[in-house]
Length: 282
Image (cartoon, helix red, strand yellow):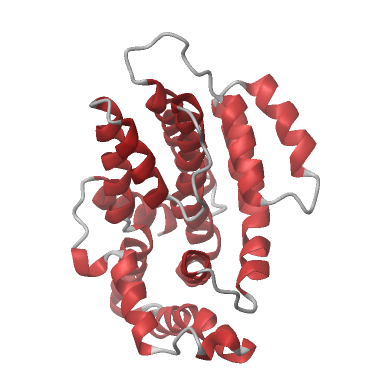
């Protein structure tokens, strides 16, 4: 169930077959407009409620359809939830805009587009730094929107994956709006702790192992190291950045670290497949 659902959802997302109304940002925006507004979310109990409610609804539906129609409704729920959680065409389009600007040599457009990709302001001052920074952003967003979600989805089910995505979405919303609200940051840091270490270790396995492993060991066992620092630092040393290439300077690191992230997702799928074959996952 878990492996089949994940593979189908990733194929649909890769082929851009997810309907606009099922994109995560669209669904999350509708949810935001339905529940409490940002002012009301100053209350910790309201914040807790809006974070848990979608996951609780998914868990309730999964319980109700368990075993119905030979499991078809249960499978349909997994697929529907997965399609929503992995539907990020807007994020892909922003990266595409950045790559297109870099390929036509429009450095100003590169800086402008880079600021729209990540919630953290771009602090690069040169083309090379911009490429390196965007490469790290690519690895981080691949983890945050795909790898971490996939881990929760296959290991703990769609309800927990929904909780992670809801917390992540509210965190990013508050970061962009420069608002401070209770529960979100510590809960997201807690939910990122183990997946970030697993994914960063995957970077070491699919990249320059000896260099990446030394960085991973120096960071992974420090409990307070942020997930973003762990992912970006390990990714940067795990992948060789070509010194001579036809690609523009501000996109060389980005392309290299995107390849690393894709290899890491492939490794994740292989591990999930093996766990399924040997009966550790259903």
